[in-house]
Image 1 (spheres, rainbow, N blue to C red):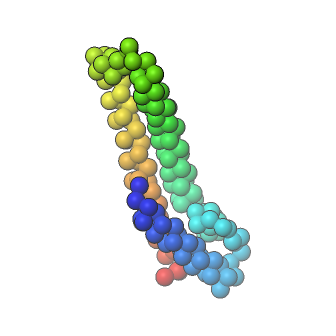
Image 2: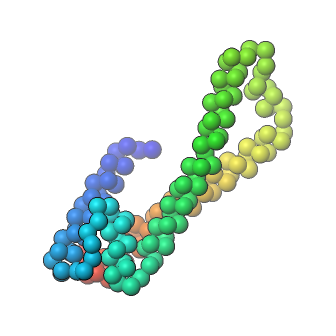
Image 3: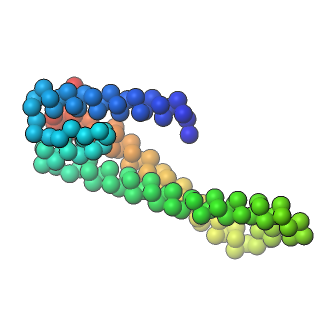
Length: 143
């Protein structure tokens, strides 16, 4: 994770939210002002009678949650293996893992699924913010 990029994204979305709020006020749109960028976009899209942003946003959130749910148990397992191998010097857990082909295949498949879900998340995120949001701004006549 690049912290500088994350800070830049937060500032960018904060600026975009401010632009949306100003547009709502200046044009006296019957849309509630929201505190989060995505919620505001969803409300504006509902005002236009569409649901594309909301649909893709829900897909992005689902993929993000799914990747976290799949990665968390793996993190706990890795921590458990390290702690167990440190506490019990008689058992070489790493040798057991290296000698068990089933564990390698299972780990490879699980890793592939996590990578695929993560890639789908980033593809969906890019589609939402680089394609759908500019279309929404265009429909609202925001420059």
